[in-house]
Image (cartoon, rainbow, N blue to C red):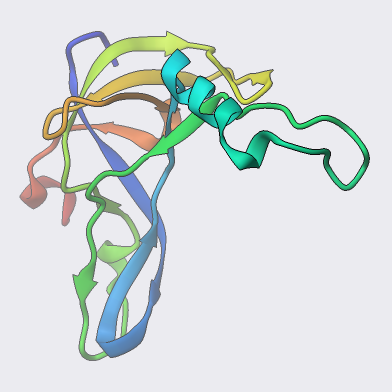
Length: 141
């Protein structure tokens, strides 16, 4: 994987929900909070007071980005063998292929910085959850 490559995210662990909708466990994409978002937290009621341990509250440092993962409709409620992995509907452009950002209050190695081609938002996702953008026909067999 290199800078500028087109990738999709891999959905795993399918399970059948209501009315035959197959849902997948999708990887999470995080981005750092801006100074304005951190200041808004300090100004909110959520920052006031102490935790249950008597410690002062620390501000959040990252936020999850939402994207279109995808679902399948299986009225027979059986997951086919080739449906164990589903690729995301959104495609992403690799901005930085290998990085270890500080998300939360610790370093997260094994990440890549991606940009959602639909929304333009950038965020960090694990490299193992990305795959080259292949055609759907090539992944079904």
